[in-house]
Amino acid sequence: MYQKIIANTPKFLMFDLQPLIENKNFIFGADYILIRPKKNGCILHLSSTQIPLAVGQLVLLAPFNPFKISVEAVNNKITAGDALHFRLNALGQTFIDSIQFNNIKNMLDHAKQGLLFDGEELGPLFEIMDNIENTFDFKQLLNILMLLDQLTKTKPQQILETHQLAFSTTKRTENRVDLVLQYITSNLAEPLTVTIVAQQLHMAESTFSRFFHTHLGVTFRQYLIEQRVKQAARYLVSTDWTIAYIGAEVGFSSLSNFNEKFKTLLHVTPRYYRANYLSLRENIDNSQSIQGQLQKQFHQWQTNVVV
Image 1 (tube, rainbow, N blue to C red):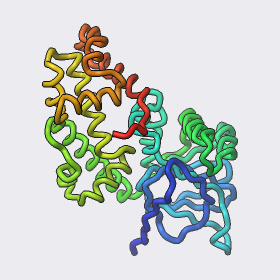
Image 2 (cartoon, helix red, strand yellow; image 1 turned 90 degrees about the vertical axis):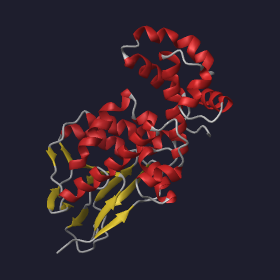
Image 3 (cartoon, rainbow, N blue to C red; image 1 turned 135 degrees about the vertical axis):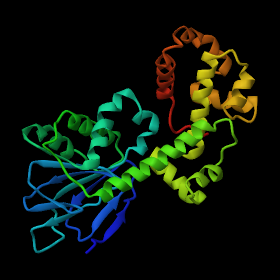
Image 4 (cartoon, helix red, strand yellow; image 1 turned 90 degrees about the horizontal axis):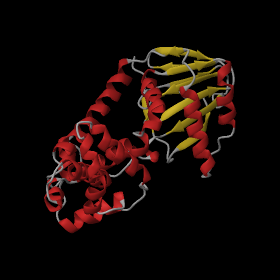
């Protein structure tokens, strides 16, 4: 008999600390979840796998891993602990792709199989969790980042087995994201629109727009402009093409539009950029020199710039 699975996408931007309570149906959500049982007798169900949880443990689950919690209690509304739901897309893709975020990103990738942490070294993590509140204070964002950073330094006691449903769904989503990004990269010079790219996934425009923003953390238009500017910056250093030719080559409709978007993101004109970073051409065989410079500059760019 198949278990009923319901979707669950709470309305929050970065994180939400919820009480851990029993739920009758499998929850299928698009968020990372850190489960902290505060009483014994909790059982975590991952498809066909059941894992008894105890006080002093933490469980990290990745998005699209169906799960449910059962509690040994008559009242199924009894609070059994904390469930910290959090999302990465609120941080912006540039931040997530940064070198400084690598350890956290690798840990979250491994969470696709479910990670169980246990031991005395979890004490500092519990102290951070005790200070997390559902407020808009900046320190709460710092608490989340410190919590994730501390968790990367703790070795999981167990990798939890999950049903193939979780893996196949997550993999299918990853494949669709990769398909979109590859299509954009290969067609930067073309007049790309939401309609054109949505057709690649056989999605309606509105559905595609939500899908893209959910998984990339930025709008389709913002991502497209960023990629065009990044590619233009590489051409400015690695080729002798004219600035007008480069703008057209990466898909900008006019030289003025190219100059405007380039300066908005990198705070300098294409001409100034070429003149000041031409020295990178000396290391042109090492593409990391250009990539590193671009990453540094995009780190300085505010992700809330209106494009």
